[in-house]
Image (cartoon, rainbow, N blue to C red; front, top):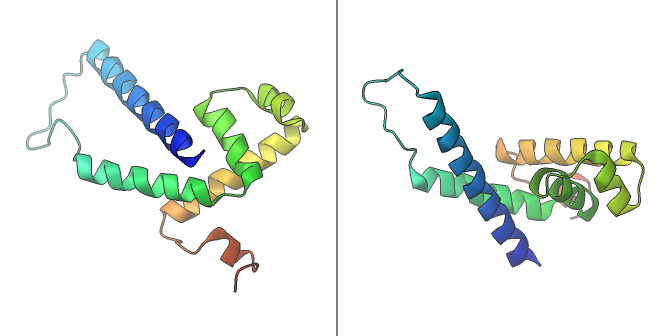
Amino acid sequence: MRGWLYTILYHRFLTDRHRERRRNARQGSTDFEVGRPEFEGEQEAALVHRDLLRAFAELPEEQRSVLFLVTVEDLSYGEAARILGVPIGTVMSRLSRGRERLRRYLNGDRLPFKARLGTVK
């Protein structure tokens, strides 16, 4: 399951990246900055991607499933609620908490989520 999820996230990342490049090409950007490389370093992007996948894997199942349905599968809150069998408010709450946990993890708070909740000793 984890490998399948990582593959989906990786392909979603690539799709978004290609979409952004096409969008920038259509706009015909005329602002050129001297000395700025045209492409970001692949190593840094790979590290950020790795950290995101680790943080995603550590989320509680309820938050992970909502985040997956809404952000990766691009479903509406209503569709996600229907699939999970929960109210829309629950979807919104789980999504908010999941995003906040990911944000904290990616900003350097590397403690496992369970340890912060007091369940891991």
